[in-house]
Each structure stands twice: as structure tokens, then as C-alpha cells.
Length: 200
Image 1 (cartoon, rainbow, N blue to C red):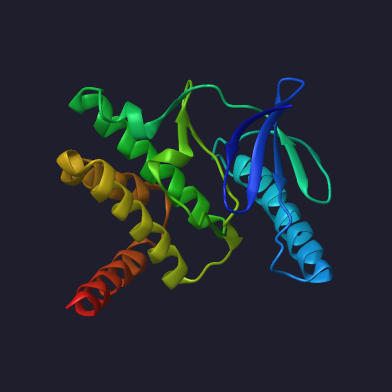
Image 2 (tube, one colour):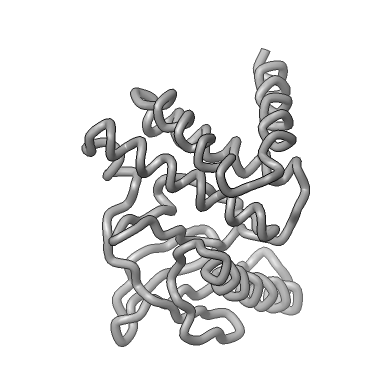
């Protein structure tokens, strides 16, 4: 067993060429609650991964789901976090447009990713979205706007030199695939204002 990643909720390792994501036991929770939560979150993540693929968002294929484990395809490629730093302006715009289109497809199908950062996007022959551990079903404008807000914050912290370019083309792509974009962008502006007010 080769461990390739460890997070707050799960450990990632390779087995027979596939990626295994196993939700780890939390000592601060009672046994019964811990098992119930891990089972529920594992099942939900597996379902959302498969649903996202069906609506045109590339994600790892799910091969098997246990109580606490998901066996899935290992996407070997480059994280967008690094890729966006070294491509040309033209390629960056194309990637940002594709990101926006994919987020729009998720929101159109009632999926909130919950952790939209360029660390959770891998480029192989196209962009794959990974790590749906915080994902859930919702068509709430607030939830959709928060999803976008997280993405904007990721751009701001990691890709600040190209923020305007990246965000502009992401929004352009989002508008192409999500009919409800206007209400979401309006709510996003309200969320930003709330944030600015809170920081004072």
C-alpha cells in the first residue's frame, strides 16, 4: 500500500493501479456517529462523482464503493495550480473558460463542489475535477455563489498576477453553461461585500 496523500477526512493510496480514498476514523466522535457519518459521506461522494461525469464534467471513474472506501481511476496529469503559472496567456484563457463551463455544468445539475481550487483540478487531455469530499446536492443561489467565491479566492491567493484574466474567462464560461448565472453573480457580489464589512 503506497500512501500518496493524507487529509483531515481521508487517506489516499494506490492499490492495483487504482486510487483508493478511505475515510479515516475520528476519535472525538462516538463510534456509532463516526461510522454513520463516514458511510454517508463516502456514499454521497461516490454518487456525486458519477453524476458529475454523466452531466459532462470529467471526474475519476468510480470502480467500487465500500462503507468507507472509494476505489477510483487515478488521473495522472498536472494540477492546474502549477499549470496555470507557466502556460501562455492564450492557453490560460482557454483553461479558465473551460473551468467556468465545467462549474456551470455542475451547478446546472444541482451539484456544489465545496472545494473549488486549482489544486482540485488536473489537466490530462482535458480538465478533470477531483476531490468531491465536501460536495453536496443543492440548487441554492447562496451555495452556488459561495462555490464561485471559493474559486475566486483560490485565484486570488495562488494566481493573483493573472486574477483578472482568469476570473473574466471563468465567468464567461460559466455564463455559457448555466442559465441562472445572473442571480448567482449578483449574490456573489453581496457575499464579497459581507466579507469586506466583516474584515473592518
